[in-house]
Structure formats: structure tokens, C-alpha cells
Length: 481
Image 1 (cartoon, rainbow, N blue to C red):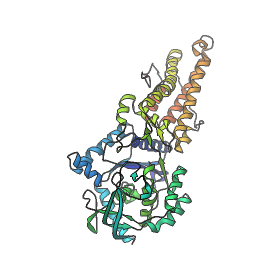
Image 2: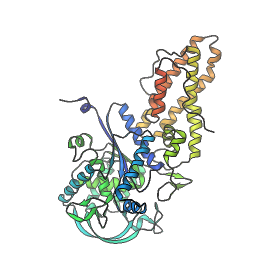
Image 3: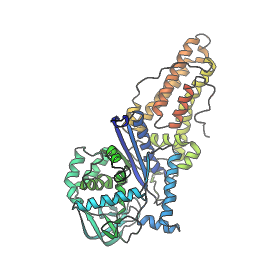
Image 4: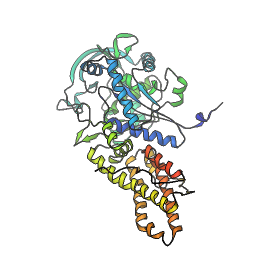
């Protein structure tokens, strides 16, 4: 028997899982807010959506951070992971699952994945000698350094020599280049696709999939002296989270991922290593990967390593979750780098939210109370988004979608100024009623389009307009001096 859910188009969206060596910052929030918006948009379309985020909790760097904090690794990751989960709640982010790589279901799935990888004949034992960036928890080439230093972490990589198990990544060069070139695996924006192809064409080398002497991790099933390399294990979370071992039916329902959002600094892992590992165990590749840019503060990349982080919870406490969601998606076109600051947030809050949307809502509802006794009766919202904003959101052009909606808001505020209903009501009250019905329909339509981005605000607008008795509602956004 086919259920309603089975008939709906599925949509599986993921964020990267965030490394818990420290609390979340605004850059982590940026990617996760975007994913939440896309998930909400696809739910509006009636699709069967699964939205995944979570935390990456193994590796030498985590063990070192835990030791520095005077805690066991498990106690340390429990605390930081909880901070991520709480921050997403504060920002109105609603994932279907929050995975932790210390979850038993993930560990079980990784063991099965590793056994399949070994059975594929694509791994072998060998010795690695070269450079290792502690900040990235990644092996790194000399060509990736600037003046001998990792560009992201401003540190020199360590020279290490150790016995590892290796994956034959070099054998996947041709197939990866073909798949990516032909958009069988879509990578966007185009600059990131070109970057990945350029890296592949330089020649792929086999990679270590395990580390010796790293106790905080998942042991290799066939070699307990080694733990699986943290990146290899973490990349498999997208499969383990939807039941690769624990619920195979659910895995079949949602895999492959339809869209994976991530920061541009980790595209090599997600667009080259991850797909090659999936090919080795004969699983489908994700359909599309989109890499967003960096936030900078005063021109410097925001990162835990640099220490210039912005805690999104501080901004939420001052401006509210919807304002923060609006700001990060409006301020910088998704996929590009851009500078953010509290001062810029405050300007957007006052000009766009308080003076724009908030003002339109207050003026309209006040006039409905004054001239229509709070009752708009039947109003008809357009069945289709004529502005193109929803299409822009669908294509991850959040900034442009918001620009289009705010053009409608500006037009409606200008319409009120020109019509002067406070004068017109003396001579033509029916004309004023018509104007207010049109403004109500427009506001309701704006609320529907804004619902994925500003869920709390959109809900308030819709509830008040649907109430049938509009009486001086609280301002949506109070100006901040």
C-alpha cells in the first residue's frame, strides 16, 4: 500500500557537521540558517523534507581541547554539542535530526562502511611522510601554503611520519572529473566547481584514512592500533544519520542528498574525497553541493582559530532571531565573501525591518482599526508569487529574493503616502476600504514569502490578519537607538 508520504517528492538537505573544539560562531549560523530556509521552502511546496545538521566530535584536536579544559573528551563534546543545539533553537532553526559522531548509530554505520571499503580492494597499508595541519586536522601539500603557513590558521604545519591505511583516491581522478564536468555532481557557485576541477586535474594522490596514536576516535575494525581519520568518518554522517545501518528503509527513502550546503574551505573533502569513498562502496553521490563564502570582520576572516568570533546568541538577545536571520542572508549574496558587524546589523534592523516592513504593518493595521473597526472580512492573497522572490530563494539567491520583497514593501508604503487615506476617508470611505483590503492581501502574501526566512514575524502577521478583529498589535520591530 502506497502512503501519502511515499508519493511526495523527497528533499534531503544537509549542513556540514561542525567541529566541537569551541562554541558556534556566526559563520556556522550562516550556513545553518540558509539550510533551514531551504528546508522550510521545500516543506511549503509539500515535499517530504529531511534536514540534517549536527556536530563532528572525534580527533586529536578535540582530545587536546578537552585536556586543556580539564575534562574528559566525552564530557567536553557533550558540553559544546549542546551549545550548538541550543544556538540553533535560539535562531529558529528546526532540523529533522541533529547528529553527533559520538552517537552509537553513527559508530555502527562507520564500522560497516569501513568493512565495505576494505572489501572493495581500494585500501592498503603504507607509510605517510609529509605535512599535517593541526587546525584542519588534515594532511596538506606544500603548494597549499603561503610563505610556509596555512592560510586559514596562520600556523606552520607539522612534519610527520607514520604508518597508516591508505585509500586509492588516485584511481578516481577520471570518473570524478567526468561526473563534475557534466554536472552529474553539481557544484556551485561555478567558481567552486572550477576550483575543484582544477585541483583534480593537478593529479589526485592516495590519502591516509587512519591515524595511529589517536585514541579519541573510532578504531579500524581490522586494526585496533589505528583510528579512522576524523574527516573520513565525519563525511559518512550524511549516510549514518538517515539509517544506513539502523534504518535501511529510511536510508533508501532519502539518499542521495539533494543539496549539501557547506563552507568553501571544506570543498576538497566534500567534492572529491567524500564522493570517491561513496563510489568505492557503490553508493550514489549527492546531487548538488553549494559552498557559501566566508564572513569577515574588519576584513579578517571570522574563525575560532583567529579568535574574532561573533556569538550569534549575543545578537539574538539584542535584536531577535528573525532579525539575525534576515541580516546574514540579506547582507552578503550567498556564495560570496562579505563583511559583517553589529553596526551593519543595527542599520539593517532599523531601516529594513523597523522602518520598512514594521512600518507598513503598523500603518495598515492601525488604519484597519480606525477606518474598518478592525475587520477586513474577506481578502484574497495572490495565488502565485509574482515578484520572483520565492524563485530566488529556491535558487539560493537569498539576498536578491529579499531585495524583491522589500521593493514591494517600499511600493506599498509609497502607495499609502500618495493615497493619503486619512484625507480620502472623508470623501470616499469605500475607496479607503478597497485600499486597505489590497494592502492586507499584499501583507499576507509578503508574510507567506517571508515565512522561510522570518518564521516568527511571518506567523505574527498572518495570525493578526486572519484574526478578524485587528486591534493595535505590538510593533513587529521596535527601533533601536
